[in-house]
Image (cartoon, rainbow, N blue to C red; front, side, top):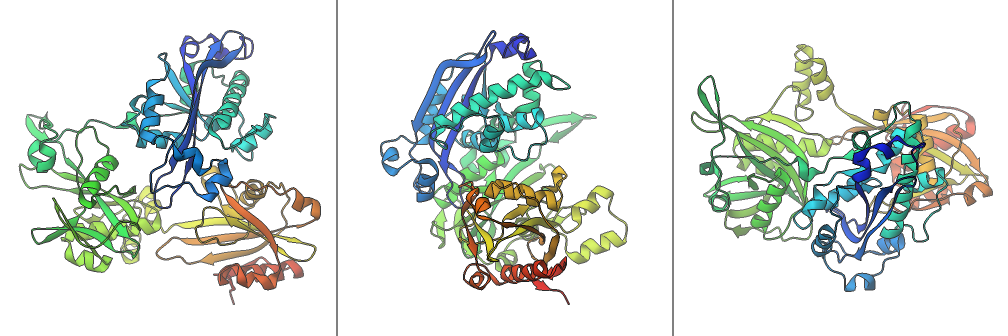
Length: 574
């Protein structure tokens, strides 16, 4: 990259910045966040006439994962890392602390491909690597989408092929992936000058491709110490957060965070104290995020770390006069499969487990309302909005069908609220691929724990303007490495998933695969474990009845040139 190729070279901010490309390899334990087993970092600095080149800063280390995230055979197959590599390795807190201390002193920006993975790990270990956790991360996927829009895939493997960058000898090892990501980053920078609106400054580059670190988004929350739990009062002595409005003193709301904690049997964890049941959790203190506060409370209440999941519901609880209001964030926690779930006593009370219908009977009405809405949000993949435990009009989940219909009939919803309350449907597209023997191609996704087999395909990215046919072709490229034309639509399948969202699946015919086509199949091991051609009479041993019936119906339509068929859970609608 030189002055004539990229205007970034003239920007003082770009010239002064030390780019550090970072990559983790990790394990993905069920029910927990990914845990790193290897990290590598490589520094790049701008050199006039050459662009960003290796600065001399590098870091590479194995990481010993925690007991709940052991190295698996799949991890070894993916990375080549074996148990003996990790035997003498230090834990993530120590390794990331060393990396944090050794960072260059100049202004630093991190660079990663698919940065949310790296950013998520750094955020979870931010106490050990505070500087790393607060540095923005340049995402080469975002930069690539801006510089080269319209590509069929922006995965690292696909983009290396598109840019004719050689695959590293040890793909899925941290330093090798860092090296090719650095080459990709440099290649993308050379293309920025040719854009209709050139990226000519570091600010432009950050605006287009940087992700703000979550640690930098945390705000200092101030509450009256008189409303904090006794154990917290000794740790945080915070002034009353107040303000004046027309001479009237007001108090900031207290922020609490609670958990819909579930065990493997679907029971809900309750905290029982002084004869009353409440939800697990507590007050969020200054400098904490709700997630960090909930993790702290759950560790104290269970005696062991508990995984904190996504936000399910937000409730506003108006208070009595002279008391602050309370805002409650309710998160999912679990499912707990390894910890004892028998009743146990803690300093806060007794933890007990009850079925949801019993739990809601034991809780105060506003807490029962929170649990019911959170359960609905958990099933639907959404977030509920409540006031005093009552689901509000316009909440994306939690209203009963009768309540929703009444609001619609009364024309009581604005357009945005109407869109929010309508039941959601998940759409997917699959492809029926056969060979000359009429065998069907099936794939085994790596993200299913039950080793199920299914037709190649996946979700339709409708938010990106994708159609079912376009999605089906994309999935073939991503899952099998095949760029194939599609035939006609064979069937549309409706599956009512209550309490989950219903699903609509479009199945297209594909070409008959020859030996050369089968030889070209390449599967991404993190997404697809295996593929095989299966005779129709063998499907009974590999796939569940609804998919087996759908495949049989589609094969009939394909042979007879009929369709598209209307299927309900795989069965032809009369």
